[in-house]
Length: 466
Ligand SMILES: Cc1ncc(COP(=O)(O)O)c(C=O)c1O
Ligand SMILES: N[C@@H](CCCC[NH3+])C(=O)O
Image (tube, rainbow, N blue to C red; front, side):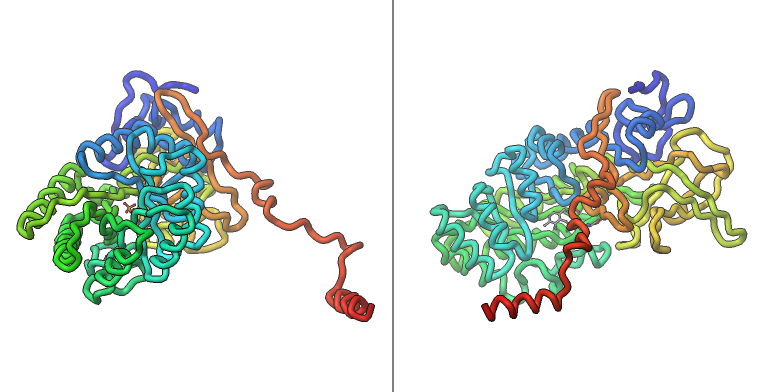
């Protein structure tokens, strides 16, 4: 694997590209010291290229900014076994929200105490699996779940630590599909409606459950601290009411994730240091005013930890110019590896990364290969005027909610995740194959032995008669 040449320059928009992304002297991009043309030749396209140093640097920044707090990486953003190990090595905790994510954590022996389990409809099987693995905390989300979990904990003979998920009535300034703090939604217990206070009482009444704190998550891809501040203010108010009513001071307050990242150069993400400083100061001040012991804060960043670490590498297949209308540049992936553009009308950018390209630029629509006209990877992307089949383009900020939300639409195999670091590349999630796609199908029935439903009914009658 070729290493990046000395003299490589960043030459890339700030905040958008992974930490180690560079443009080499010949105009080819490298990430983690590995040229993207070499990556495409060895691993094919499309491919998610994950800059390990970028993720680890962000993990360190979050741990330092939120020192004396609990930083849970939200595994829904991206999770695989190698990545779960990195999360562990970086001393982060892990938030899982399904039995599947829990299974990944278990498969690498992720320390159970540092796991947190979310979900508005965890199955009994998932609750049992979580209790059996002794996950540190389970965030309860409904009254029926409180009963179910109490029964599961009792059956296992343990006392399960829980947090109560509260909807603080805060409207985050983000897409409505990824906003979760307002009243009208499926997650959590309403603060204003009194359900949160009743849930707290219900948990306190269960001897098999130990209430350790409250949880709120107001939404995702957020660029100002006002919403987090308002949520924190309301949650501290609830902690004080719980103390007054039940005589207990809950030791933990988890304020969820949601910090935004840059997808295009128009986005201006907040610094984690600034967010941490403000939130810690605010909670401290509010607690002092109410005479409360300051709870241990928890945060659950997903996108902010992994989103910027990854670029998706695509190969251009066709260029269709519609004079006076637009130019469509088709790549070999699409909505099966990036559903966010179609689902949230998310904005992305892209860059020609396998050569410098002409100085003139044209604004194009970067589309995928799926049988769907909404299959757009990025709208209005400035690419060199001579972009052509065989070129490699990279889409930055594709580390969060890309591979984890990928699908097999049109029976397209999902791309691999290639981790790059110090001039070497390694596959941490392999590319799916057509065999993978066929593996779950039942074998087609052999026509010689297939039985019609009429024949089946006949044989049933014959059996009854016998
Ligand atoms: C409960 C919870 N925690 C954490 C996250 C992570 O959010 P983000 O990736 O925006 O940081 C989410 C997703 O929105 C979530 O639902
Ligand atoms: N999947 C969403 C965020 C919501 C995730 C979790 N509640 C996104 O791509 O932005």
